[in-house]
Length: 414
Image 1 (cartoon, rainbow, N blue to C red):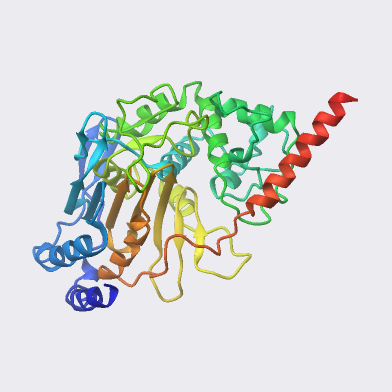
Image 2: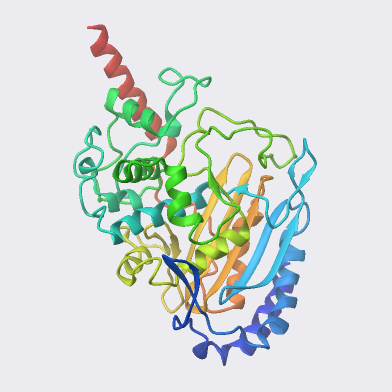
């Protein structure tokens, strides 16, 4: 199927290449959303763009996505939707179909919103990215970890998903605050010295949500609404702190359409638990081009890599994954996978292209959306799931955690 699709890429890339230089975003006049924010006004989408690209995008969707797909698929240029599709069921029990206003759980794509909240707080001088996290969370035991190290996954903090049932039973809902308490109680060691390497870990973004709450004295779901969703008119978006877990939500299903039940980890937020739509994520992407939403200084820090200890094309900025390849444009994106929810949000910033795909029925198809990026420019073609990425091996992480728990229990018994 790839070989049949490639000629479309080559043909239309040639058609578009002569126009690329003149189609960068311009933030001149602005359209007012509310008193505190202005969406950037992009150059108009060229008249020949949609006719040239619609058929190729449609071909990609039909050949690589559509079969057995449940979810949302959207491609936009200069903030304008070029192609979108909504398909399948959001909730089997109520026969609720997916449409443009159906909030779906986007798993780790949630980290983009969390990072933006922290970066906006940094823009307002309410948080300092290179300050020790104990300045904001004095109760945490770890020394030498900065806010930036949480954002770029260089802290070494252990993953809460490996907590055994012996210290937190499956019948009790885990919370962000309880995660900190358990890390401290059992003196769980860092995976590595802070800022010495990269290892993707959800706990980093759990702590960022707590920091945002501590600084603002507001609960994270309310803060996200105030700082992100309301200004950007993301009317179909919300953060679930676990209190909204019910059958009325769009539910998650495995690849055989079997319901994935809520677990004791589904009350944790910051790393996940954003429910949103493709159209709302497009609004978020549009806002990142505006200096009124994020300063140019903070965006330079967000859209750059921090981990170069190992050779490779994968990297991580502040809330964004990256694919960097010499001689090619950088691909910024974030994938998501939690229970049966999978998805990808990709921002091709050199060409002001946004691509979004979200599914609530488990599928790996979403992770192949980067193949579409080569239609619009010279972007890396490698898979978005990098099996060589520097994660701590689960067996090693679990062993370290078990040893810390045994040591604590032994000390208590003595």
